[in-house]
Image 1: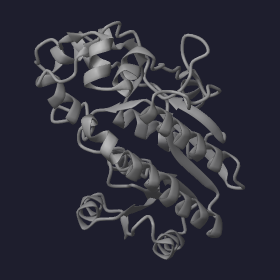
Image 2: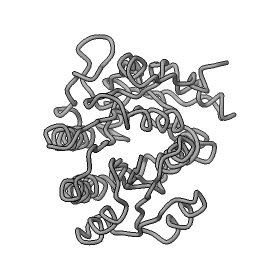
Image 3: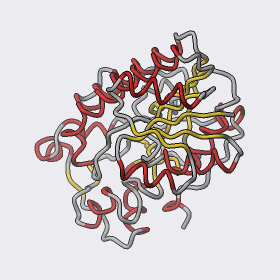
Image 4: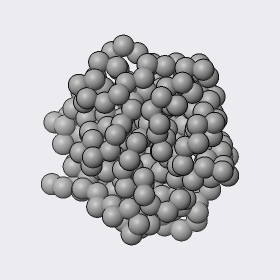
Length: 301
């Protein structure tokens, strides 16, 4: 199958390209930089250097690829989570406007299927875990509400289109080139005692290894259209996973602070992440994508 990947040199783009090639697909990867192009060339794929906001360049690259499927992994994520507030508006602009240009190009080029990156951690759970029918937390704290609104827009754009639409609600990525890698931004914060457990710490988080997410994305090439939650089997509260993660990376146990102090020092979003975030269920992905995620590394011991 001929597949066009936008955001191909990013954290999930690289393992996704590798898995697509391993499965025998013909791949074209779009990136905006020479450095990204060099990384992609090492995989032996067709490389398109294009600015996602350049309508002509994006459509020309997609048309030249003759792709049957587009996978939209466009993101602008900083190296450390502490920098996310300063990146958020540019990240959302890339996904909404740049992704919109890509989606319209897919329509113009007669692409059969469009696979969209979405979120499995900014959802409102009606039961113990969120799922494919769960709405986004659009009334959450400011940063999270903004992202929730963005993801709701992306999902609507893809699923209400004339192209077959698949939405993948990924969990928090961990593994190579993510915040939770040995050299990742969260790892640095934990080692520097800058990621405390906030009083309660009862919000449940869902993670997914970046390579498992790539496997599920390749499976989505032929799955039924619709939404899939792509997370691992280990939803756990911050008060459980964060100390275990610190131990896993050889860092001191994270400090403990009250919700009031966290609100004052780190803000409303930090408190929401640790006290109200919802984990999600991967039951549908297991059933329909043959998804079999690995255990969360720092919970194994």
